[in-house]
Each structure stands twice: as C-alpha cells, then as structure tokens.
Image (cartoon, rainbow, N blue to C red; front, side, top):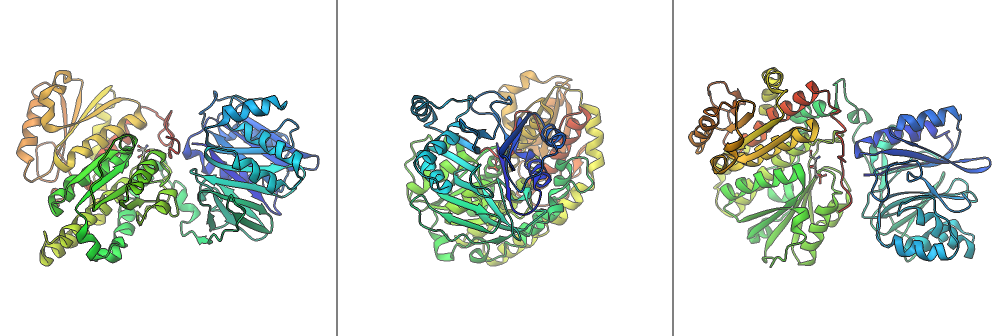
Length: 599
Ligand code: M6R
C-alpha cells in the first residue's frame, strides 16, 4: 500500500522525509516522490523503484526545505512509472498532493475538470485531487477551506496530504478509511501513514479518524470534521522505541521477529489476566450471553482464527463460524442474535476485514477486535479491543503477530469456557497456568533452530511442498504453506491430514517434502498413519511433534490445543531458511504489501 510522510517545522526536513519513507517500505511500493517548499514555490522530484533512487536525486539537487510531503506508491490505477508516481500537481504546479487509497468517483470528477480545461499528466485517480483544489482556489484564497471543499467531492478511501505554493509551512491532511497519523514535535509537526516513519523524532502521535481534516503548520495542528466543526484528538504517547522497528542485528526483520516471539507473547499474555473483564473488557454477565462467534480475518490472521475455532469449540463448547473477510462480506447471513463478531488483524487497517466488521455492526452484533496497531481503524470501529503487544511487525510475512493472536484467542477460549460453566475454577486455573508458560515454551522451541536450518538445507531445492495437520493444527499446516509461498515463491499447500488420501496423495513422490504436525493427543496415531501413507510414496517426511517420534523436530510438550502455537515456529523457520538459501528478498516479497488497505 502507499505510504505518506510529511513535515512542517524549523528543520531541513529532506533527510527526515527520506528516513520516514524508508520506514514505510514494509507497506510495499514501486516508486517514490517528494514535493518540497523552496524559495520559488513548490518543487517535485520522483523516482521509480527504491527510495534510494529518490534519495540520490534529492542529494544531487542539494535540496533544502522546511516543509515537504512525500509518498511511496503501490500502483493501483496506472502502471508504476514516474508520471504516475506521487506527488501530483495541479495545472500550474502550485498545489501538490499525495494520496493513499482509491477515489471511486475519479472518472466522473476528471470528466468535469477536463471540461473546465484541466490537463492531466498521469493515469491515476489521485491526480484529480490537486486539480479539484486548484479549482476551489479560484473561488477563494484560503488553502485549507479550498482543500476541505475539494475533499467533500471525493468518494472512496483516502489518506491525503496537500501543500500549496501560496501557503508556506501549511500541510492540509484528510483521512477516510486509510490510516494517517500526525507526530507532534517541538515547533514542528510530522505526518505519516504509520508511526515508525517519525518515531525517531517524536513519540507523540495524534491518530486521525475517518472524516477528519487537519491543518498543520510548524506551530499548530487543528483537526475539523467535514462540516467544519473542530475535533479534539488526543495525543497518544507511543511506547515502541525506534530501535524496536530496526533489525536488531539479524539479517532480516522476519528472523528477528520470529525470535521476538517469546517477548511478544509475554507482553501480550501479561495484559490478559485470568479475569475476563480485565482481559477483554467484557463483563461476565455479557460473556454468559454470548451464544456463538463469527471470527473473520485475512491471510495469516485468518489461520489464527481458524485454529481458534477448534480451541474455542473444544474448551467453551460454543459454535464458531470462521470466514475469510473477503468472502464474509458478500454472504447473505442471517446473523444470529447474541453472537459476538471478532475481527483479527495485525495492522487493524485491512480493508476486507474492516468491511466485514462494518457489516456485522450494521446487523447489530457486538464486535471485538484483536489487533496489534494501537488506534488503528478496526480498533476504533469495534466495541471491544484486545491488543497483541508485539511491537511493530515490519516483515511482510507475519510471524509474531500470528502467535500473539493465537495466544489472545486461546485465552479467550478459556475465559468463555469458564464463563459458560464448562470449566470449573480448578480446571480453568490449571489450564491458565499452563497457558502463561507459553513464552517460555516458545523460547525452548527456538533453541532448536539449527535442526530446522539443517532440514532446510536438505530440501530447499524442491519446488513444491505439502503441509499436513489435523484439528487445531490443520490451520497451522495452512499457515506453514502460506509462509513458505509468500517468501520463497515456491508452490506449497496445506491439507487436513485425513484429506490427503482423497486426492492430494496423487502428487506425492520422492521430490515432494511433506511436513506433518503430530502432537501427542487424541489424533497422534491418525497423523502417524498419514505420515506412513506419504512416506510409502517416497516423500521426504518432516514431522513436528511434542512427543518422541522417529526423526521428528520436537517442540516442548503442552496440551494439544497449545501445540499449534509452538508448532508454527519450526514452520516459520523452515520458510525463512528455504527462502534465504534461495536468495529471496525475504522482508519485502514481490507483489505483496504489509497492509492491504484496499478491498
Ligand atoms: O494486518 P492483517 O493481519 O489484517 O493482514 C492480513 C493479511 O493481509 C496478512 O496476514 C498477510 O496474509 C500476511 N502477508 C501474512 O504473512
């Protein structure tokens, strides 16, 4: 997704802006650009490819400026090229804008503006915004007022920033459905799609809400709604240190984040006491009334939801429907009364998940979100929010957010079981105590990194991989396959162990590594049978278990419903090492974006 960075203050901000753009690289992008104030007015520089390309350009021009807006573009309308990259300007080059999102009515606005004589340089939907502001500035001189009038004409999603030659030091910003946050410094303000972009300079963040319009100058930041009413937005103090957003000595963010998991789950679990009101904000009386759950998410978060279905059904005996958000929103569901809707999302900005949540809200359901990003759109739209406390997850491939989501959902399952009288106090306390050892169990699991690295060396030349699991570990097989395909670009598929004989076994041969998850418990023998079926076809078998099993990578013993949270770790490591051996660009896999803020 596109990234926005802006600055207005007393410093020469070009370096700050370049640094900010680099911090947003995780969002995925194909080109970058900057509009900056200089003595003659506004100047714009753009480059296709990495931010470094833009940086070289900026350095060669010896740019100095106290106010700038900049952008990393992830192409939606029009191919990646200099003309389509942002900032876009009006006909006279006096207004510059950067935009993240999609303007749904851009074609019709463009037709109207063309009739009025506006000339367009790009194929983008975004460019019309600069021309709309230009048009409004013909009617009245106040930049912010003209900006507001232009924004009122937009339909769709936007995080938007604009600068104007005749309003030095002023940045106008607007937000609807795409994230935008303002950083408050001393005699300076920052603007960004995400906090890490300015965290090296300030930890004071003002999260804009949908419908907000902000006027930023070096000394002020005023927020209004579309009707011109002033909005009070609180200044949040962000506790993530800037170094938490760095690689911390690891080769890639992904491997750092895999090793962050003991701390991430520890920080998450420490906010989940054995009291449902304190942990989830849900009063016991309200929890008792919950008769079932819809859990909706995308990608890795969806796999967390799917695994949780088995855990919740097992412990709490409640019905659970899990669906990918992109499908959920199209279903004609006769929503059950007294069912709780849960949205799971690392970023809290995933457009599909947000749309599904809004549908559930419209149907009158209570909503709970499990998110990692404080103040993100999904959290603000939900009745209840529980945060995973992972710190920023920079690698596009999600790892620590996943295990923390599983931890929150496991805790939720135990709480619901207790509230619904399925677990007695003693049983609940025993299970909760075991749950609280999870960070330590993850630490122990990570100690066996070398076994997985060795296996990766043996199998990394294979072009196709299969992952098998049953029950709560079946979604972990799906996640193992997703992780591998995302970062290695190799074919990988996950199946329920029992399904293999219904078709997939046809493709198994000696060139196909098969990873099987076999926890000690009710389905261990069945899983071992599946393993025998595939090894009889010559497959290279990799077993992950928590009980001594020939040739298996062992994770510490826990009950079979905690096993998935440990079993995914060797799978993350396997995906990482195979991809590293293949020389892939692990943290920024091709075609993928960290945060998918368009439907
Ligand atoms: O931010 P979210 O958790 O809502 O993101 C959902 C998916 O887009 C995300 O999990 C995606 O599948 C990751 N690339 C997985 O590694």
